[in-house]
Amino acid sequence: VLGRHWHRASTDQGRRFTREFRTFVINLYVNAMVTYSQEIVSTADSFKYRPSRWLPGENTASVLMEFKLKGAAPIEVGYDMHWKEDAWKIYDVHVLGLSVVAIYRNNFASEIKHHGLVGLLERLEAKNKRGTFSVFVK
Image (cartoon, rainbow, N blue to C red; front, side, top):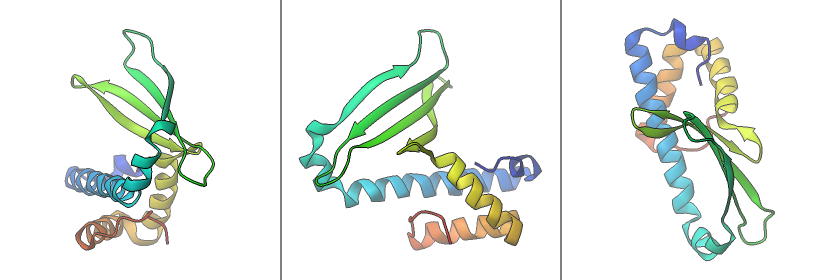
């Protein structure tokens, strides 16, 4: 997500970013699931999983999920995964064809340009402490 800025970060900054961004993404996802839990449960039959791009022995895979909430067009979510440390790890999510990594990379690059990596870290930490898990845009 940090792109070229990752290589410029100190070891401590890298650890801080990983911890804070992981917390932010997990809480953003959980918050969305809680907000829409009743609707998700009531439309559970609409969830479809398309065949993934994966062959036995490969260490990357993609899973596509499509679902429909009441009164809305179908929503497609794709999960790009990598096999690491004996488990599948998600490294990108595509919602309606938009890469979450690309969106955050652009937002974070702008934040770093204006406030530096330390400013981005402070903002992430503040959002996590306040429980503000909305999309990270100005």
